[in-house]
Length: 408
Image (cartoon, rainbow, N blue to C red; front, side):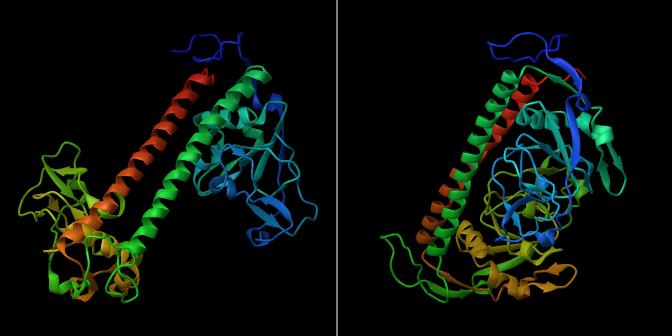
């Protein structure tokens, strides 16, 4: 627990003394970017720039590398190194608590960017403002479109240590961010590797064998239509309201096929107390959603590894003699072909009567299992590396609670 003194819970041993209480308006001047429409941002532009919308999407606490350029540099507003930038309008209030310190001077800053220019170490300030999100949001006004004005945010109460301590704290979080970024790139590379491997492990462009094959297998794959190797069933009932935290029966609502499950369903995440005339899974079933507001979501297939799971309405159940995990991965690989069978305009549908015409090529059961297991190993590696990112982010969040002062 933090003491009544203005000091953080965790501190580097070389620093002592209380932090100084200030209002943001006492330590900074407030300026505003100018112009810069989205249309004026071009790939090969001469001048580096930041559009306010990029503060939501392209930049985090520190802006070290500029991602956009323009050819328009007429009466522009230019950054100074150490400026802290915040968006001043958004359709949701929470986005307005984002602050980014720009490490480069002479960058064109567009309209709707609030520029906080201070003697405080900018990277410390941007991280501190993000830490104080709940306090910042008290200064947001509006209903349909929300705004953050300098006249309001200048009242934000902050606590300041010496510049060297500000720098040490900021550098600590920079190191953590670099670790998170490196780990994120590792996951992206693994996902890219998986995508490339699928291109080689499944036949493409009418070929009857894949480009890469395990040495113990040979011979052409057998051409089949999905309707020749499977029967098609449909889940039943199960509204969102019937899913409860401490329910007795494991279940899957069709919407979870978009959000909670990937190619393989090994662990069930939802439960219900309603088990009246329900449709139950068999191990090896392949599940697909049958309706969505966008067609692309309907090419999602998931193999369920557990029997007796309640399957809700709008779930197409493909029950076959094919190794289910191989089939679910293959169907996802054939996304472009699957989407040819989708119908509808406002709401899109995938019917068994259409998808049964999907052409696939099948190797022996042993080869199906080997391919599926190879991709599962990659998925496990991706999941393990993704958990490392989550742990690093949690560690960062916890460290911020201990290294910044928030008297309120």
